[in-house]
Image 1 (cartoon, rainbow, N blue to C red):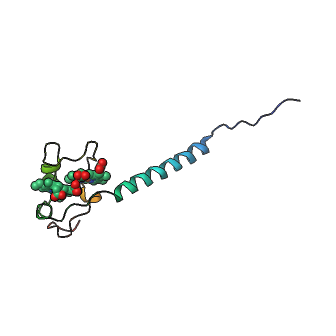
Image 2: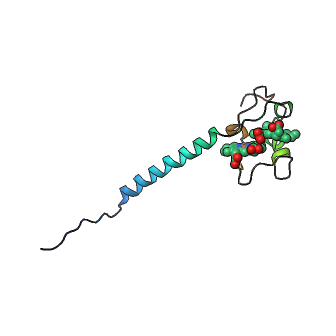
Image 3: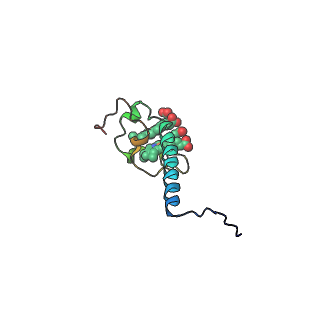
Length: 92
Ligand code: HEC
Ligand code: HEC
């Protein structure tokens, strides 16, 4: 009698399944970090900063309050940091 052991060999479908699971986890992690992102303060300075260049004068590397190391390089600040309630720019 020959021993026939069924060994599991990951195939293409398994790889796809694993990829989908990984993607869901990544999206969940990214999603949760967005929800804890600090809002932009609703003060005069922030209400009157109308573009990201202005933001980065203070929050760029040499600004008074630089973004943390490894911070996103995205210029769409309000995508993650809630826009001040009385922001004087247009709707965004
Ligand atoms: C004139 C300088 C200046 C400009 C321009 C400026 N900020 Fe700020 N920002 C500050 C300072 C100082 C603080 C921290 C003190 C405070 O809470 O007011 C701060 C706080 C913040 C915080 C909250 C950080 C915390 O610790 O709670 C966020 C988010 C932020 N700014 C984003 C922005 C965005 C987005 C813009 C452009 C629309 C911008 N800032 C423009 C100086 C500036
Ligand atoms: C992709 C999302 C995203 C975008 C876009 C983004 N940020 Fe942030 N930002 C974060 C997260 C998340 C943190 C918190 C990081 C941490 O505490 O480690 C943060 C932290 C900060 C802080 C420090 C807050 C503190 O704790 O003192 C400042 C200031 C800031 N961001 C400014 C900006 C400015 C200005 C822009 C636009 C040029 C911007 N961010 C765009 C996600 C984002």
